[in-house]
Length: 405
Image (cartoon, rainbow, N blue to C red):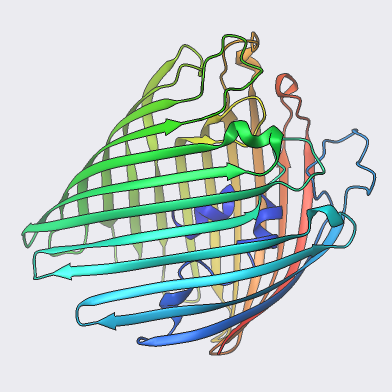
């Protein structure tokens, strides 16, 4: 998914303890061509509700707030070999908490992509990723360390039939696993196969028709489902992909269409409708640009009771290039989540909540290879009594610095 949406989908714990402060996944693209560089980073953050405990609930023994420090080191590779390009990043981080010492952990981020070309008609990529980090505590109540391991392999190939027409096929395998026993029911593997017919006229816009099948497998059955149904699912999609240069300063991007999902543990076992997302980027002349988006889609949830939610959300963002070396970014997200479950969930209509988040951060490019970031994140969630979750608010402040050398 795009970087902006990925940040919104993570809790502030994950943001500040990992990807929010360090170099982004695409950091290799900022390094000069034909480069092999080392990276290092240091960060500090304070969270006033680290474990996302509900209002009015007794805090764990160490209280609600905590500060933590993160150190990171790694290597970045960006190399061209004829018409091929290899981009790779390997990073390791150490995060230490002042009060909740049992959460201290070592994070790992390994990823590599080979962008290949064969003649003038064939091109694609092969990629792999391994990410180990502390999972967010947004949807379950615990003060125990819960590491999440994510593995992803993907490949695609495109065939240019005509200067304006292209056929593409792709495959992705995502696997997530959790250390904490209560979270093992969310261990899952998703396999995606898709094909796309893409029309790209000379003006720079593009229109594609995407057919996709996603199969999800959950190896552990939840004890809360009295019927013994598992969370495996099959999802079929037929969507339009749009990249429209509406004006010189406005771009519309979207992927939306019809989706049918069959999942025995979800409600009646099958659901269908319109899913997808649409984003608009407005970049007028001057230092300020704007983004807005809406979406409706399924997303996994790290709850002991249900595996997926159907989400409807909207977001707004503003970027201000205050100077040649300083930028300020702000964003707001509102997301309504609907869970549905069989078995013991007789009150399935009440399995709904909402997430609200707002963030602002300033980025100071001290030197071409030295960056300092200061940020603030606010997150709030409403209550779902049937899932044992209550309303909470959380605020995070962070200051970080990283360097390439």
